[in-house]
Image (cartoon, rainbow, N blue to C red; front, side):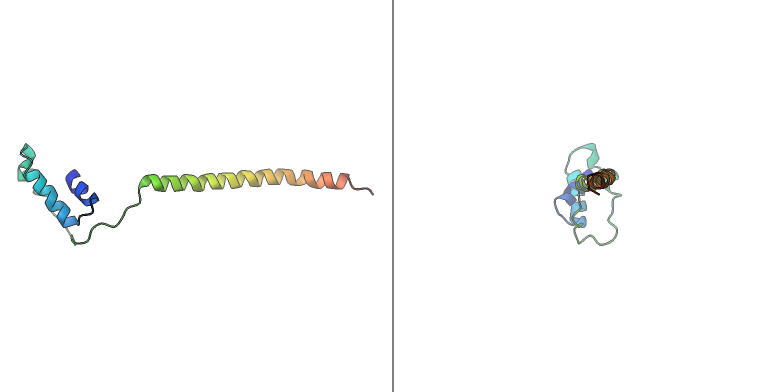
Length: 98
């Protein structure tokens, strides 16, 4: 299966990747060359089209961390603004001459 996914990652179609993986096992000259190890793997469905591009999980987690950091920063800024608001109002009203 590692060979199959390796060939898929090269951009081959599913049927080509499975065929290449089976041939790699067949010509490997190891005990895994015996078809009983790889003969049961068959492709179901359309094997012509290659797999669509995949977004790596590291990019997804980086985007999630950036969104979380932005929300945390906005919440902290809102809390600070809420605390400073009454102080400014009292400071402005105390300094006014009557």
